[in-house]
Length: 119
Length: 119
DNA sequence: CTGGATCCTATTAGATACTG
DNA sequence: CAGTATCTAATAGGATCCAG
Image (tube, rainbow over all chains, first blue to last red; front, top):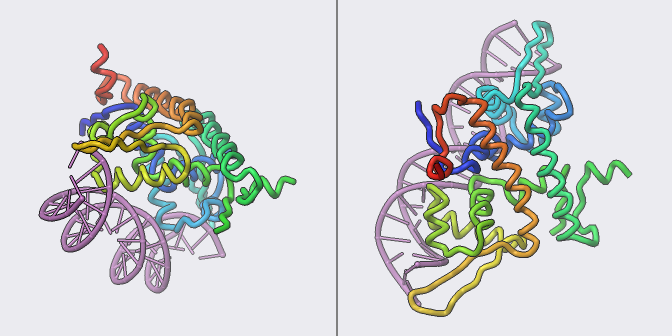
């Protein structure tokens, strides 16, 4: 199937767009992680969505899936070598997010839990 | 309404996430643009979605809307001063998109029209 | 017990027609 | 031309089931 894109933004959104992917990838930048842990970290995602999104990321070459043949089952996801190239991109996104909150809610009306914890 | 985020990625996705926003903002980085032109550039978007997304971006302080009181109507959208801070972020995303295509389709099986035109 | 699949419902996006 | 309203189609969410 031959696909055409109108511009590079279409490419990016095709690969890491949607409601969950950037979020999943963001957590994967901290190293390999098991399904359950990932599900816990990506707030609000369902098992179904998580599996679907991970499969797509695998097919796009950004994530690899490692199955440990044991009971109880253990599956770990991690960034592929090429997936690592997203680290910087995700970092830029996150930084902007942090600045945005400061800009819009300078008096701390809105908080980011992960950062509040580090105090 | 007091909102809480678990991390900065949630913030970013809340503001520029979804199927269309990054795409719209990307075109706005080229300067003020009329509704119809924007609709033409954001491939596949419907009038309804375009209006909805622009309203949300307005409410989040990233986009401003200027109405010219004339017949036929003319409305122009542009980035706000703060919205300009997204320029760099969108740029990083686009660059990654360009690299990704080269990596996955090194023999040019997939093309990006906007770039093909510049040859 | 963990990871994943399936089915059904709820929510959101798309298509079309209409108004100022 | 820009925007709204209504209806339909697609997609996400929830509950439940299954395999190892």
